[in-house]
Length: 81
Image (cartoon, rainbow, N blue to C red; front, side, top):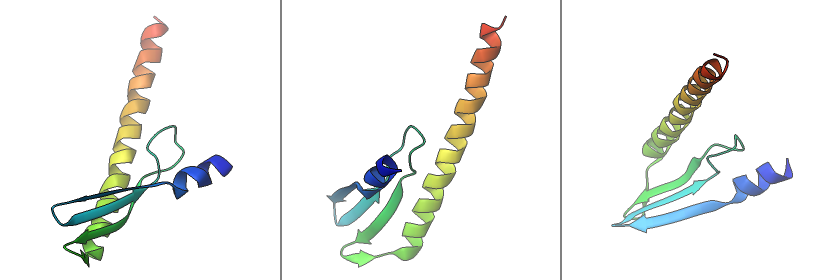
């Protein structure tokens, strides 16, 4: 639990061409999912875009996890031949 909290407290900030994004979380090892904490364009925050990006990130992780699970099942099946 300490590791998860430590990872979730980390964040990355990128600003380019008037767009500022802050993302927290870590993609990997099933510890946490990334979450956009702040999104602003020319200093104006956009909650609708922020929520939509977070939904897209979550869905992307779900699709990737399913694909990896399916592929690992195929590999196990091949190893058992």
